[in-house]
Every structure is written in structure tokens, then in C-alpha cells.
Length: 358
Image 1 (cartoon, rainbow, N blue to C red):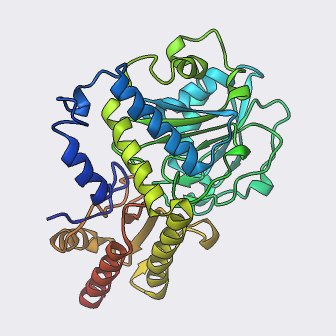
Image 2: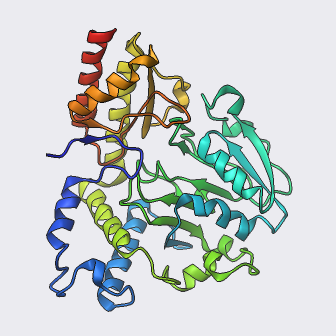
Image 3: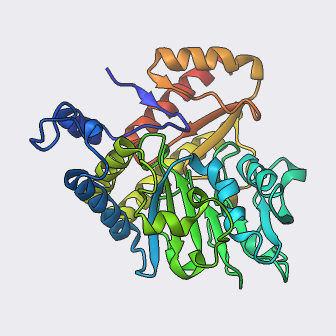
């Protein structure tokens, strides 16, 4: 029996998708082999890869002057790949510090180029996100990098920034949660293990003109342009994760696309935040305008109750609610594949626990 999985990543995948994959796992499309055994250069797999790419283009309405790459290494690899490609053109880059992941991105980029941290909420424990209108863009920066959704703190920047510089976004835990105007960005990257599929795949959406500005003196494996020329097959890609992503893209389209999921996701998050705010037993420390719709963090009034809360939650079929070790408390990750019913069950349990221990 499957339970409600609130893990931040690898995260819950739609049962419909899992059932379809299960039915194809032993033999794919009358090929006599599993999709995991098929050569990435075969005609069979090429059609799988191309269809997945086109479905993602359709879902996000990606303009024709962009390429979509299916890479490896996670968002963490992008922390260095981005500045290696673009950080040396002017010798510096602007970064926004709004949580743990943007801090890691800054740390890696600082080894490669001069980093200007032009806005930060670190002094207030990342309880809010710096308003893009307050960002002081550096004259010489090659690009501006930010993280629209900090998975660990549960803090979000909901509006795409409007600045006269190339914008790079680490959208790992928010991509495909709602419609996105890709044309506002020069590069978007996202680890797949939140809203796209299993871990091991990294999606990069990149403006082709911007891509051509990339540093040509770095190894080919680090060049976006080389991956683009090779159609994401410069080396053997994570074929099963790519196949799975394609199944998730089909599922998103069948459900009604990103407008459908936007409504669902805001509804789920709103219900959970409303209950937390109505309670004296639970609390959320993020400014209301910067609350994430994907990762809802909350704290119990007495952290000595954290362990029994988690224990009883598991007994009630609610898994992976423990907050990140650097923050503590609880975190409910409510990505696309988490239905409203799962959030309602969580609230029901929270009410029970409050009545018993509050």
C-alpha cells in the first residue's frame, strides 16, 4: 500500500505514471528489451528522447530560439557549469542570496569568477526573499543568478525579475508547478527529482544566442554548446530518467497543463498555510508574500515534540516530513504529484496531534 510521501526530493511521482512504466518495464514497445537496455543512439530511443523534449517545449511554450538539454550532475553541477561558461566574459557575475541553495551556488561560482552578492536575506535567516525591485545590478556583471524557490527554507520569489542583464534561474523545486515565461530568462536549470521524475537528470533551457557566448576554452563536457550540437548525447545520458521524464510530461499535458497544476498547487499550499496560521501550536516563519507553494516548512511550539510527531505521522501513512537538518522543524513538499487528498490527510493528522499534545 502506497503512503503519502512528502519528501523534498527524490519526490513523489504520479501513480498513473508509475503504473504505465511498470507495464512497460520488462519489454518496451514490442522491442524484446527493457527501455533500460536500449542503446541511447538507437532509432527506438531517439524517438523517446525527441518526444519527451517536444512535450516539454509544448508544456512551457518554449520559444524556438531556445534549446532544451537533458544533462546529468544535478543543479549542483550547474553551480560551476554556469560560471565556467559565462562568468569569465566580464570577469564577474551577480548573485541573489535567498537560502541554502543560492548560497551553495555562490560558493561554487566564487571559485571561478568574481561574485557580487547584490541582495541577501541571510541576516534574517532567509525568512524572506529580496524583492527584485531592490536588486542593485552591477554594471560589469555577465549575468544575474537567482533561485526562485529555496527548497530547504521554503522561501520563494514568485515574480520573474525584470533587469537589463541575462537572468539565470535555478528552478529545481518549482519548475512545472505553474506557467512560466521562458523568454524572460537566458538560462533555466532544474534537477529532475522534484516535479519531473527520478533523480539523475538535469534539464537546461537555454537561449541559443546566449549559449554562443560561452567560454570555448573549457572542456567540451562543460560546454552547453557542445551538448546542444550533440543533442544531449555528448556522453551516454541517463536514459531511464529521460524516459520517465517523458512519461511525466505526457501526464502533465493530459491533466490540463500548467494552468491546471497552478490552480491545484496554490489550493494545496493555501489550505496548509491557512491551518498553520490558525494554530497556536504550529508556526511558519516565512513572510507571507515569499512563501513557497512547493515546500511548506513549519515548526511545533515545542521541538521536543518533533520526534513523536514524526513517529506518529509515519504510523498514519505520512512520510518524510522531517525538515532539513540545517533548519529543523518540519517540511511538507507538495509537488504536482501530491494530490489535495494527501494535504488534507496531513492537516487532519496535524489537528489530531495538536489536540493530543497542544
